[in-house]
Length: 322
Image 1 (cartoon, rainbow, N blue to C red):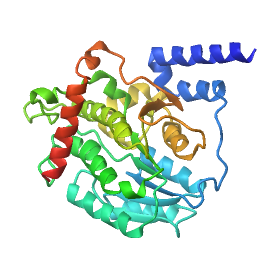
Image 2: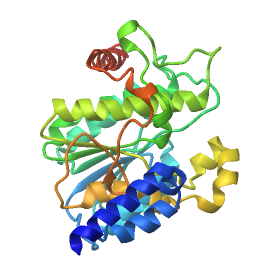
Image 3: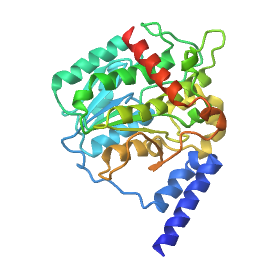
Image 4: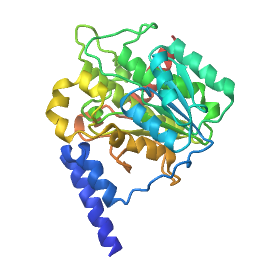
């Protein structure tokens, strides 16, 4: 009976995933939480553990931070607006244990500064959650001259992870990606292509998807290169957040009845951080289950060893030059 139930559960989960709308909408967690008998977490289960969250002032980041607070984590909140990040800190029941740090994750000088602040504490990091990001319609440039979407979603997070690796031994790195990356292949880094779209060809949605594809690919690469850290990427499905409403107003309006709450979107972030169950490094997750990183043949074609190596070189060179 249990075997039959397991088979049926997997079939239902895959059916949801195949329909996209079913898997990405609020129907996904509503059904999967029952199929999988999702574990719940007791207050205090993260007591004494440090969790770092970037972009904690709204949407998924705020929802995750509030849940981490309920679970007793010692939070380090990294945001670009000092007033907003401090406002979140003061909301926490564990505000006296929490720290608010200021950095725009696209500004690599600011990222290095906040990394130095973390290193100065000497506190081991249980989980580093890379959540900060935005989808912009205009092409913006960072102080170091990089396209802002690539800098904020890829360069800054990779730099922060690299700088605080000494604190992450045995810890977890969780990158909040997006299902939008399914439509975007990796640029051909091995042929000299840049992921940063020019002003003339700029498309904010496409640029965002490219950045998210890079995140997921680097997640797999980093898992291989750093076996003492558990790397995970996840996508939250379609969630009703201020970012979605601002950047994709038409989409948000049409899909409003089926959008997930921010809490539902953040659930897998919390689960990857709080669960005591062992899970493999380098995987891509949604609704507490591993998901494929490719759905289309077009995205597989550029995902080969040579291009992955060139991707890593491009990112690391961009960071080193800044």
